[in-house]
Length: 374
Image (cartoon, helix red, strand yellow):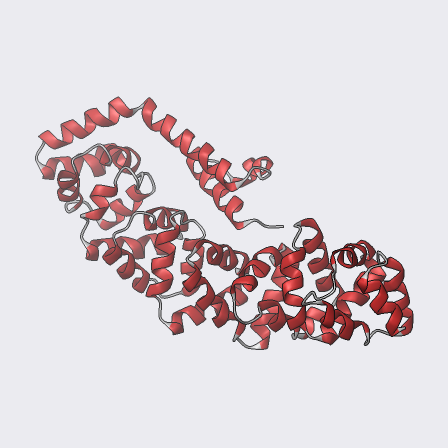
């Protein structure tokens, strides 16, 4: 399973350590939050080790004429040192100095700036200049850097930068590295319906469903439900791609969580797609329910799946996932909302399949239903 949050942290950690992500794959067992703590600790340690040097350069830059400081930055210090020094300079001085530096050099410097330390500088940075640098970073594919800056951008700059990024797949890739959920929420609220639909289309076209789902879980409920409902209203090919991504990357826990929040049924909508009837898809749903203890959320959705698709779940379980039926039967009680749906579904099973399903049950209400239908 590809966990977008863990993947994002490994990519960012590799950037800090100036190594390839393949060298850090042995850390993928750690939770994203622990990886983030590790990355921040390393970043802080590296900065503190040379802080006196950065502070000294910042003090010297403040004493020199801006034109000379700009030439020293571009011709002597380079983007790495300049980025480290920037966070130690008075914001007004840093902004004035940046006005004398080329866009290309500033884009290079962004790779080495700690946006949190430089937040006062970023807050006062001219919007039009920020957009020019955004376009340069986008051309260079610097999604990590752009995601880090999104965390601290003032709203006017955030919205202007969003509007300047015309390809919605780029928005998704940048959002993958954003840590500030409130900023993501603002971006989603800023986008019109056309751009939101384009994000869904891009997810299907470029295999970015894990990133979309991870983003949905991090934004506010209002925006999350609006995006989820929009996704469920898309054409069959897009829903098919979501089902296959959910199967491959185990997105069912997230989809079931979102489904529990929605007035309409996410799982019910997906269940009516032909792909949902495939044995591999049904197995992935069953396995995810068992592995992630999603029984309550799954059972909340079964009435909306329809008798035919629910019968298919029972059929696959009877043939390949018998423990699922035993546990489901054990959890059923008279009056449960999904019991009627299970009774209707069991009536559609061939006698031999009903018998296999019955034999896998725990002698509860589901077993009785299967026996009665037989």
